Amino acid sequence: MAQVFHRSTNTLSRLTIFGAVFLAVALAALAFLVNQSSYFTEVNLAREQPVPFSHKHHVTEDGIDCRYCHSTVEKSSFAGMPSTYTCMTCHSQIWVKSPMLEPVRASLATDNSLEWTRVNALPGFVYFDHSIHVAKGIGCTTCHGPIGDMPITYRANTLYMRWCIACHNHPDENVRPRDQVFNTAYRAPSALTPVVYKGRSYSEQIALGKVLVKEYRIKSARELTDCYTCHR
Image (cartoon, rainbow, N blue to C red):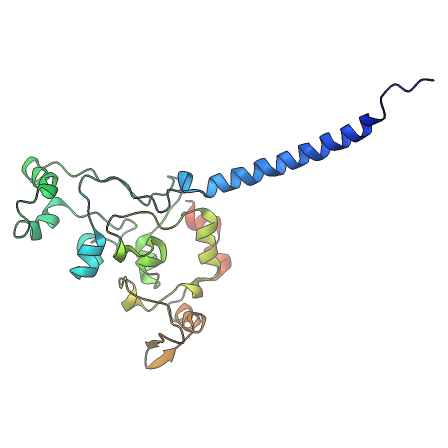
C-alpha cells in the first residue's frame, strides 16, 4: 500500500504541537507582564489634578502632619480629604494671589468642592480600613510609598490582592512603632540606622516587628487572610 502522508508530516506535526505550546506560554507571559505594567497598575504615573498639590513641599519642607489634611485616618476607614477651608487656613495668608491656587479660591467663592482625581483606589468589593492599620502600626509610606518626596502624587504600589496578602502573611516585616506611623522619613531598623523602642535598640526589622506584633495584638496570618477580612 502506498504511503498516504509524506515522511515530513511527522516532523511538521511535532513542530506544530511544540509551536502551539510555545505560543500559549508566550501569550500567558505577555499577559502577565502587561497586567504588571503601569498601563494597568498605574504605578509611578502621576495623575492630573485641579491643583498640582505637592506632598514634598507641604509635608517634608513645611512639616505639616498627615492628619492635618487627612483628619479621619485614625478613626475611620476613609482617610478623609481636606476641605477648601482647610487649604484656605494657610492660603488666605500666604500665596494669596498665586494663579496656581485660583481653583482653590474659586472653590471657596462658589462653595463647590474641588474634584480631586483619586490616586489610590480599590475595587468596590474590597473593604479597607485606614484606622485599624494605623492602630496596628502600619505607616503611611508602607502603602503609599515615599509620599513625603512626591512633588506630584502617584501610586507607589499595585494594590493587588497578592500584594496585600504578602503583608498580611508577614506583618512583622512592616509594622513600626505607633509614634512613627505618620513619619514619612521613617526607615526600618538596620545596622547603620537602628531604631530605639522602649529603651532597647533594634538593628533588624524582624526583631522589632515580632515585638510589636505581640504588643499590638496583631492577628495571625490565618486570621488576617480570611476572606471576610477584606470582602464583606
